[in-house]
Image (cartoon, rainbow, N blue to C red; front, side, top):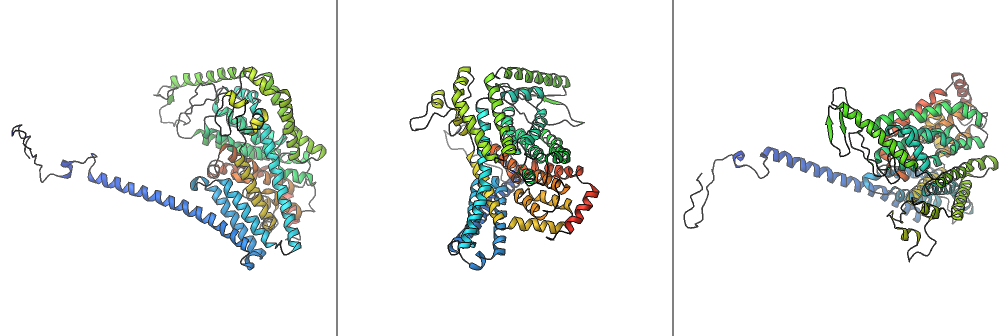
Length: 624
């Protein structure tokens, strides 16, 4: 081609010819990549776009199919058409079972389709009860109306007892936290951790296991999750791992105590088990089922991809500490890999074992200093609040044992006592005088200044939002509504006879093996409520003597089987509500270890002679 053409021509336009036969490589491209690379990039872009569009279409299809089917069933129930479907008991059972499966599936893929699980379960519960109600023909049959009211009253009693227990229990725990009562607990745990974050999981799990046997698995789960938010405030993934293990430990700890789990309490009240024999039979299997996943989950949590986890919070200390950052490298080094470590800024050094050891020692010393600093925040007032709160929580099982008072009434009494005492003593004023008042939050979780916190805004006509009132504002109502929806849905299945039919089918399927029966009962309790399944077992084996091995197996299965899925127990649903854990996350991270521990827990219970004796007993049951 030609050159630059000199500079003459008096400013005439100069044409720079190009080589006609030049290749694409010579000509080049604006991106600096050859055409083959550009073609591959375009193909990848088209592939990503196609995948993205497919996922959007799949989300829309799942939403439309799930909500559409429920809406269709609701409309058919309202217009009472076709009658041969509405009034046929067998078809009613099939349709309600299908609706429940659809609802559980939408909860499982909540994060993918972007639908709130509380809204889905409330809509599902309303649809199932409407479809069930029209089958009784309450407007045309007096007997049908009476039966419907009986089923509704029974369902509302079951649901109301759980909700009225959960609401005040969360209120008591939030009140203790509002007045700083957990400061002493966090200091003790930090001292036991000694600057090692990996010790948090075993400490909190052992604490939850024994606490759930004294109170119950629901309250112990709430307490443990609240403590975890102080100790691991900024490491959300690690806190969720610990929370998953808390659910397993709480359910296992409640299985060997008559007051630890609702199914164990049912067997105890109806005279099927006694406290000494249940403790003797199930303490070791429950300990195995509750703490065996600890090793696996701890291993999983510590083999995550290498990341810099910086923990700090407002209350001081490890995982919540006064602006001091504690970096932790979670990836273990292989045998042939260099040693890596990081500093506060995230910079790394390679093959510097000496620096690694010095930094590890420095982190331990920082953790001890933070624990000492946090110990200064433990005031006598906070210790008194903690002791008073624990006394009120322990009052619930005591009243239940001595007076037969239902637990939800005992917990309502505990919340009322906490409310009255803290208001009478004006503990918020004492906290303000100490100069260590936590920053209050408004209804949207936004920090407020003191004038906004202690003087209500102009449009607010109620009392000041302080004390227990401020603590109650922190409760998650969407979680309570999710509880309500799933319990009402299971109650509709129970009223339709689905669960009793399922329990009868389990007995027939096991062919006289109580061990297999309890295994299937435990696995089933991971999906549906274990209370009706246990009640069906009690009805079918009325002649079995007290403290028989069958009842011990039933108690262990119902208590530990619910840990396999997050919706299988109240403790798991509480974790989903309080910590935002999704169904699929729990299934992938916690479910396999809970399943292993469930089967391993039976190793210490089965006795060959008793097994043969009970097999003969079950084989001769008239229900078979």
